[in-house]
Image (cartoon, rainbow, N blue to C red; front, side):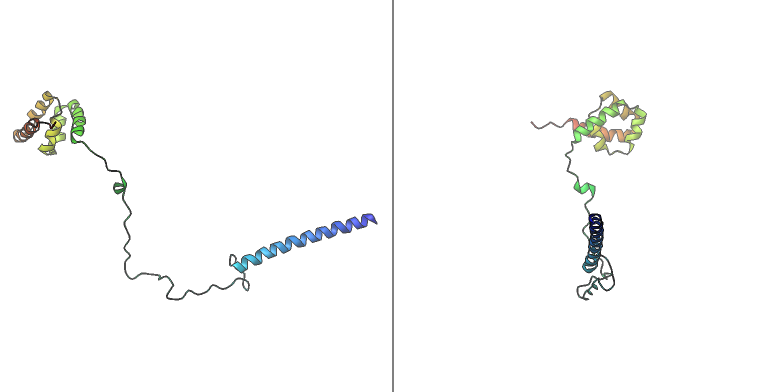
Length: 155
């Protein structure tokens, strides 16, 4: 008899646990349906219609003006440049170039800008470059070089 009681106890416990699991699952599903997370007809509440005054328009008749996104150039930190420092670095490169190639490179340069770089170059190289140029262009550049060379730096 003791064994039959134990079997009935185990059987009752198994039935009780099974029913508990089923009730928990059913409760979770009903809860999700009532809260609107899942759709079960009859349990899920119907969505309330949005009044026309509050509803978002589907298409706007007037074009929207948006603030333009900042470009990379606008978000960069401003950089301080030195014309003289740039001219010195470029003069170092130009001093190493063959004269005929250098004349082709500077062909489109403005005399004012070219004179700043030539002023920092080796004088012998500058003489070669000016000799390879058209006389009127070489003359203009020579005048600009003279003006730069005659400047007295402020102390």
